[in-house]
Structure formats: structure tokens, C-alpha cells
Image (cartoon, rainbow, N blue to C red; front, side, top):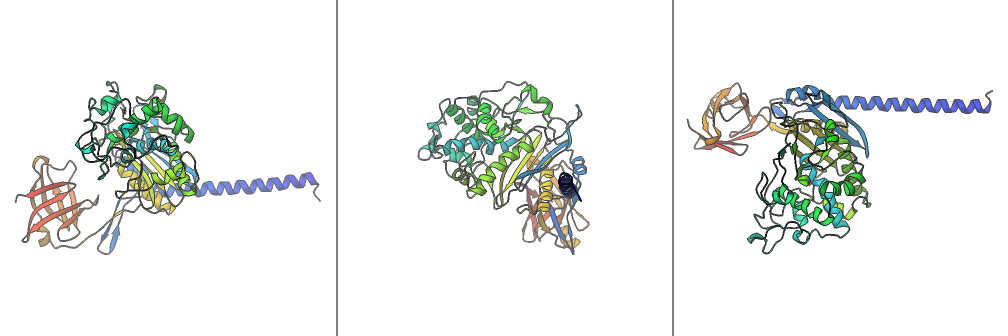
Length: 483
């Protein structure tokens, strides 16, 4: 018979063994899950071709090679906790630095909803009104009045949801070492972009404006009487636990060894490794997926529990109420999730936060080619976790005879954009010509007048008059048939 101490010790050993076994099982299950995601990247195109369905799948590292993408970093929130985060590839090829979960990336326009968080804090404590003329709070610089502001004014709400009628959709950035203009000078067009001005009546139609977020940046600076990076660190980043994230531009020297280098479409490095964005609220955030997901988790939890936190629940409800263009006050808001994309020179990023379940995904890439792999990875993750809202484009092949296809052949002129030659190729069309920088493009028919790119799904709409093809339109381009 066991003595009491020995008996208790045995129970402890059994319990520890059981816990360790469960932990190992969970780790194995998670490793299998990540493996399925990494080997199940799905193309953004599903084709119903005769009696089969064509949809390509990819391995993430092989896909990175195909797309000339040096590095990818991913963080996944599941059941309200960071379930996994992982880096792939190279942060800087010349320095032979690999991407890991601590590698900093430029977030591009994801800077906007994070910056919007400070504006919503000010609204939540009634320091500002979202619907007051923003000039009420601006002291260093004012939005110039004109014929469009006689009756309607530029307000914080309208800036946040891109209905303020302001110019300058995005910013170019500045090469490291260039003279960086002040924010008021940028707003007056004394940088490398046009002045930020009201060009249509505020409160009307949606028009994406990074310029508007620079006005918002100036308002926050004027109100809080400090520099923007310090304001964001004190009120947003530090409370969220985003200890390594910063709006400082230029990036401080002590963070350079953690920063990913940006890469161009052709795989070459961005000049100077990365560019500087003094338009910080619009494009200046440096962060990691693991830290950015803390912002997503916080906003999501407030929305789902309706309990006040970093923001009041009522304010988050406003933030996540979309207008008719699916735009909330900062993030876009779709049926199942909210979030934002980002694009700085050499960088692409995306944050998607589900509304009904405690799930979120952040993907950051140090390449201009990043959007493709972001979309493909998101679809793989959404499928693995059973998350709604991400599905591929669907195209349906329609059989046309060779004689019917011949009607679309010839040369199409796109004026200054070049020319395109169309020829029959097997059961579709082959496109070549000076308008394209890529190798030949192959189209399949979807209807008597619509074809689609077999790789991307891009539709090509042919205009037909009295049985004769007259022109073709795709990607906002239109070419007239010459012969």
C-alpha cells in the first residue's frame, strides 16, 4: 500500500504526463494545420472548364520564388489568442537577414485605421466632435475654403470615411537622405504631391484620400500639442502592447537591423532599402504582424463584447458602421470582416478581422508583388479555419468554334498605351503586342463577347456591331480594332 506522500507524488506525475501529452498533441495538430496552409495556397481564380474545375494550389515558399517575393510574415488570431506567427524568406538579401516574427515591415495604408483610433479616442471622450468643421481644431494649418465648402464642411467623420471631398489619393514617399518637407508644406503642395484641397462638396461621394488623413494627422498634432509618433505611442501603440511599432519617419537607427528591405516588381531592392513617409497617419507605420494583430484583437473584442476598452463600445460601433461604399471610420467594413490593405514602396500588407468570430489574420510582404500571395494565403487560411468572406473569382468557360474565335482576331490600337494583336490559340485567344510587358496572354471565352485571362481572371469585353468586332476593353483600357 502506498504511503500518502508517495501516493500524492504519483498523482502529480500522472497529471503532468497527461498535460504534457495534451500539449504535444495540440502542438502536432497546430503544426499539421500550418503545413496544410503553407501547401494549400489557392489561386484567386476557379475555372469551370467543360466537365472539370481548374484551380491551382501552391506551396508558399515555391510561390514566393515564382513571384520574386523575398519575404513574408504572417500572424493568425484564433479564439481570441495569437495561435501562431511565422516568417518566411529574406528580410534583406545583401545582409543575408531572414524574416522572423520580430522583423518590422512598412504597413502602408494600414496606418490609417490605426491612426483613426486616436481620432476616435478624442471623439469618445468628447474632446472633438466627428461632425464639426475640422478647421475648428486646426491651428497650424487650415483647410482652405472654396466654392465647395460654402454649405458643407470637411469634418473628421468625412475624412475618416473618405467622403470629405479632398484631393491626393496616395503618397509617393521620399528616398532616404532627401529633404523631408514639413506636414503643412506637404498639405500646401510643397512636397512631391499636389496640395490637399477640397475639389467637390464634402459629404457626397466616396473618394479615397490619403491627403485627408494628413489633414487628420495635423489636427491630432494641433490638439495634443506634441509630435505625431509620440502621440500615437502614448495613446495607442503602448496601451495595445505594440512595443516595437512606430510612426517615426525616418525610421530610428536602432531599428534598422530589424527592418525588412523593400523590393521592386523585378526583385531588385528599393533604392535606399525603404522610403520615408512624413505623411505618417496615411502611410508611415512600421510594425510586425504579431503586433498589428493586437490592434485587430482589441477593436474586435470591444465590438463583439460591447464592453468599453481602449475605445468606447459606442465609438467602435460607429467605427465599424460602413457607408454605401463599405467604408467605416478608418477600416473598410464588409459583411463578414473589417480591415485594410497597405502599399508603400516595396511593401504590401493586409489585416482582416472577422466580425462574428474571434479570428484575425495579418500578412506583411517586402515586395511590390505582395498582393497576389497575400490573397492566396488568405484564402488558404480562411479555408483551414472555416472563415467566411474569402473565395476565388469564378469563371465559366464557354465553348466557341475556331470559326467563331476568328472573329476576334486582328490588331487593336490603344493609342499612347500601344497595340495588341489577337490570334486564335487552341480553344481560346493569344494576345501579344507592345501594350503588354509580360509574355503572351491567353484568353478563354466566357460568352459571345466576354473573354477572361486564364491566369488572372481579368475580363476582356469585346464590342460587337452588326456582327463585327469593333473594340475591346479591359483594366480601364479600350482599344479600337484596326484590321
